[in-house]
Amino acid sequence: MTLPEPSPADSQASPKRASGPPLVPNSLGKASLTLGIVSIILLFSVGLCAGVAKEQGWLPAVGVLLFLAGGTLAFAGAIGGLLGFLGLFGRNRSRAAAIAGLLLSVLTVLLFAAIVQNAQAP
Image (cartoon, rainbow, N blue to C red; front, side):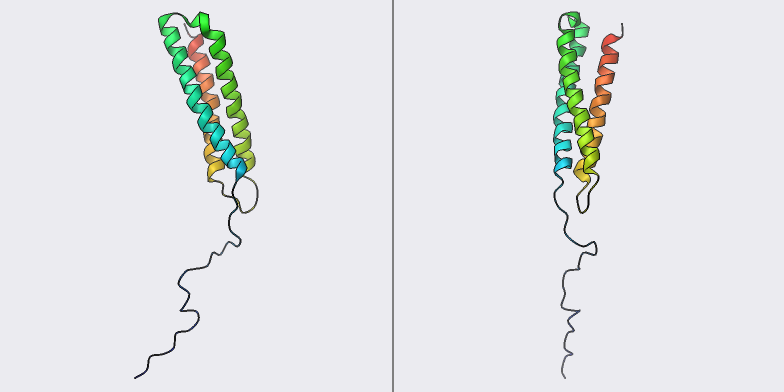
């Protein structure tokens, strides 16, 4: 009794990708993600300092400094959002980092607005 010869189609162990060429790195998405992470962490720290300063009564002494630091970080977040938006376009690029960077950057700008709103409240 002899076994049948395997056909060439049976010898392929791994399935082929149907989408074509492999994905290339998305440098805009990575830059957006990096800017988003750094700016939201540092802006949260500035907001925490502003909250403590308001609670203890010394916010008028350091308010301008905290506003400038927070505004700079919010601007970096806005640049990260722009990079994330631009990273969504292009062929054969991974979009996960661009989407995450875009979301973090939008959260950074919204956090800055919330901190300023809370600092101005009586």
